[in-house]
Image (cartoon, rainbow, N blue to C red; front, side):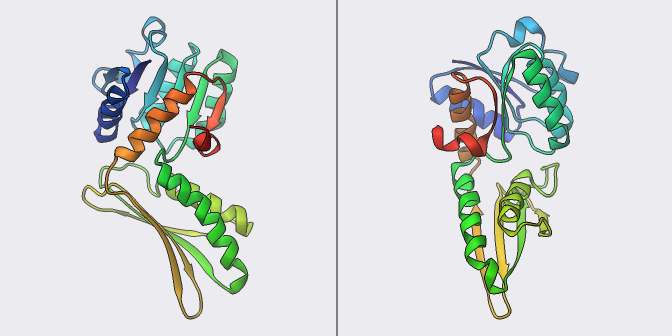
Length: 228
């Protein structure tokens, strides 16, 4: 498979390494090579089977507009852009592109989302209140993280409301920690996912690209993770 990776940051580079380990042909574009999406011409983009984006909230929309407009298949690992999600879905539908997006491509985090729903269901009638804490590296642009927002949405789907406090921290080179906290009158229960490496994010993104290469349409990673 021919993969185009947009973004040469820590995660983007790791995605390229994992993709090569999987036997795929990989081309990486960094921000200087793709200023304002200038490199994403029709002939260039259509030379790849799937495009994976790990850039920034500012760049990803430009990249999606260029790639989806020519019917490309895209896996989006960038977060902080979901106010434009409806527009990007509509563009993909109009131009025959395929879009797979998600706030976190770690399989472990996806399991945490499922556990969070069970955790909340088990405790919601026992007087507990729920909050979320997350910690990431200092260069992460969006706060709270997309993962924390998805975790909140999973809890909210059980509680029936979104009044769930999220506390975000940015520390050093932290790969990412998310904790769902249930606080009762006399105790607290914590459900935590702590990343010790970015490799699970990269592995998940490459597996998502492999899956998307044989499918068409628009997908949330949460909805397809069990099919990978």
